[in-house]
Length: 279
Image (cartoon, rainbow, N blue to C red; front, side, top):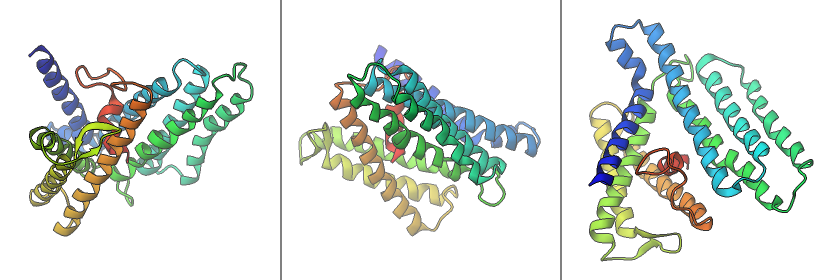
């Protein structure tokens, strides 16, 4: 019961932070803040929350894969990922010239050059994980900026990205319920060598739930596409989410790690929470 209470409180706090990051501009508008100020605050709150999440996820991944090796290079890898996110954020939301996004490669190039000067190369094979962290986490996370900013005006609107996450979380919940109730007794396992508890019944349950959430969001007016498009997106996000979960599970299994971190009490790290969203 104590662990359940801890997990419940953590989930509520995590959910509240995420909702505020997506809807802060609208909440501030309801509280009487001018539209211009609410827009600016909404952008900055979203950028701050998701930049923090990016840094934590990259740190968790590098701690899992590199341990205490090449600490300075780990910092450079995180700097490269954070720089990419910030530049994408400024490009989509504040009109920064797109060609300046290439500046994100500067910390990566410094990291490459630094690799020549590290004295202890006995574990140099794990140096590749410094680049993997950028490709696996920083690149897709930076692309989220394109889902919250209007391509023409740069206005902030977190509803679309919120819908994406609701579909992914709905898929996770459906897969868990169907997997626990039916998947452990009937049917085949999905990827037993990587995640022994995942089953095909859980997958199909998650797929149905994801599509159901997408359709519900369509009918309440939040998911602003035609019905067929919403059904397709629900299925696509579910399938991509399952692969994202399995990919992180494979990393954890290889390094014999249960959770990527302990930022969220009772749930693990941020990479555990967002692994489905990365793909």
